[in-house]
View (cartoon, rainbow, N blue to C red):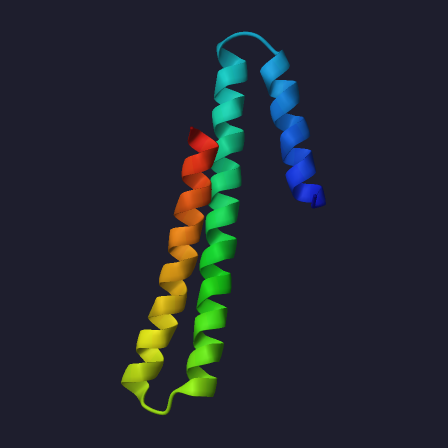
Length: 88
């Protein structure tokens, strides 16, 4: 398990042990922070992967754009899936 994920889990456990409205707000803040972090990473990785694949495999600009957009779409879909799991 990576260090960032482990720290996030520890943070959520500490927040869950506290009582009151402030703890719920901090939990929500931690979830949003994790969701934004995952989303930005996945979208950037999808864009880099799609663009690299497009440059290597395609000759025309339309095909390159389509492959790059497909990579970004995969990143967005993956980010949405993980973010929705965080909020359930």
